[in-house]
Image (tube, rainbow, N blue to C red; front, top):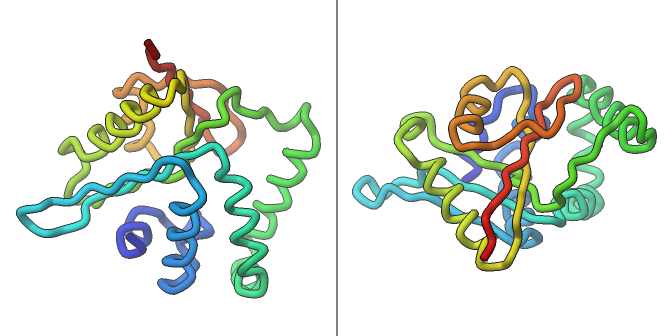
Length: 182
């Protein structure tokens, strides 16, 4: 999963700077602390092709991961100071409600990553459908996600899969998708 993560997220994502050991720990931590996790495998090629992590405790799990790996995260921030500014902006946005909008849905897709060779071949769609099926079984009627504005491929994918824009901020688009729960 860490290999796919590194290949899927560019240098603008803090986790792309983690290194394999810390990234493996991070992904395992997210999976253990979130409600829904899925992987896609090409059985013919015996190859891992994508994954999705979703939950309603993602922020809490990230904060706990940072607490457990505080020294490593601080060292990474000091080596990559651009992210210090980004994190300060995030904190300020959360503290001042007029600046920062919050999604109406707590259930959030935190990560969806698809191997470049498998993009456009239905892998992401199948991961979303598996998630949505489980959300409906659990009587959850909506979920959301956010994507950076420069990620045109992902934006096209979410629009094609009937997500609606909930709101935007300086760097991201926040999407929401309503589900029919019976």
